[in-house]
Length: 375
Image (cartoon, rainbow, N blue to C red; front, side):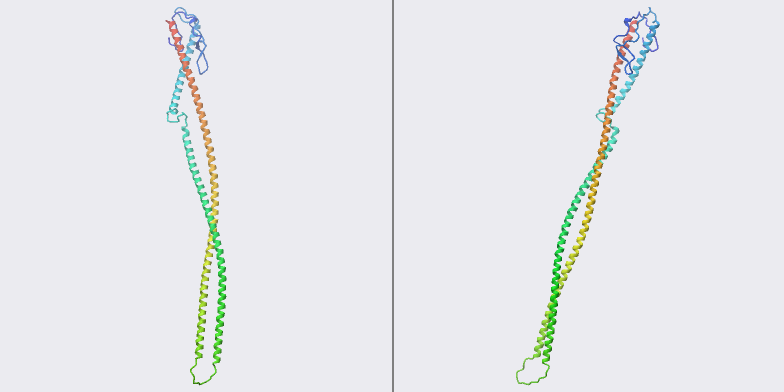
């Protein structure tokens, strides 16, 4: 007969006694929600009453069989619901393994990091950008350091050049003093030569006057003698010679004075130009030195600022990486928890399958017994 809910089993065979009742090793019991099968129980109502010859069950037996029939129908409904739930769970597990399991194209470990890929990619791009920026900052720092060293070398060279120019200026000052002394000596010599020339002119004029005065009287002497020397001509010749000699000395002195004066003026002009050029160069070097010092200070300040920015950036990214690592660890723990729950559900499912098989065996045994009694 079929075990249909709400019907009474009718058996036309002989009397069923307590020796054919279900009990002992296995049976049904109303356990907790996760299992409907337990060992050591009984059917709850044994078929212990007697059945008349070819008649129906008595009132108590009918009620007992109806209760058994209802309970069995409830158990079958629950087993069917559990089968459907297990089938749904199997489908979900299969879909999850198809999507995230090995060979699915995702992480080989079965961990779902897909929703974090965009965040990780963004952070990786930011890290790469920060690394490039850090490399650029380090390059700028190295360039600033090299520029500072170059400026320091230029400063030292300019300082040496300045000291050399100052030494040359001091030497030129000494030369200028010597030339001034020489010029003073030459001027004194010119004055002495001028005074000597004036004295010679006066002496010559006095001699000429005295000679003219001595020849001023008229003396007429007639002598029959050889003609004498012309004193006037002789004096004129002497005067011409002295004048020529004085003029030559004057020209030579004037020429020497002009030459020495021109050389002195040229030397003074050259020294003045060199001194002015040296002063201009010193002024320019001072300006360059000040500009280099200002630029060096700015480069050092920029280096300090870049180092501070680099340290802040590294600290920020270390903190962000630590936070991401903590998130990943938390997600791994959640995945492990989900895997444990899934394994527990698989174990429970296997237990339910075992219970189902045992129930089916009990039902089949029950059906065979009923069919045998009916035969």
